[in-house]
Image (cartoon, rainbow, N blue to C red; front, side, top):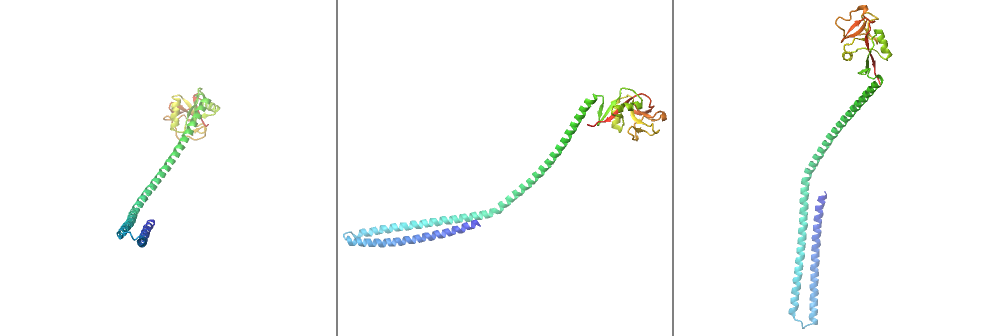
Length: 287
């Protein structure tokens, strides 16, 4: 819209300039005519006052004056033509620019819109990646904090073990184990463990059984299992009933005479409760 107005303004300027030049040319001719009349008057006056001047000289001056006037008129016309040509050229250039801009504007606009769309999509992808990386970072920080806390807990337990038990107790899965150096009956062995704030060992699974085998080796040791209350019904010292065990083949087979369980080499066997053997004590370790 602005460029269209520029073209119209250029046309108006062209017409105004042309009109002004034509008016100026008319005024100049009027001044030339006046000047000719004034020269005639002066010539006539000079002829009356000075009749000795030859008539040939006056005619020569008039021819010269008319030549100057013709040259002036031609120069004015040339200036007008040059100015007109410049204005027309400016109008043509402005028109061409308008046509070129109008032709290229849609293409440039489409290119800009495409670039904007691409940049918007890239920004969304970057935001998605940033969010994912932030979540991963938070997860790693949480895992790191958990591991750090577990490590601190282990160090505290380790230090506590060293401070209280001087290497006599063995730590495994939050539980402390102790093998007595004295040999006693099953009841005396249980009393001995309780004096240390523990009890005879309760073996809960295969992993704990394998750990006890490694810790005690081939040593015969009492464990916290008996059927003294009811023959054939083996119970742990916490009152829970045995569901499955690691007996030697054929055991338990002692009847009423053998009511206490002994770790016999790598497996279990039922023995008389009054026999004297070492024992394994255990207690849960919490800081």
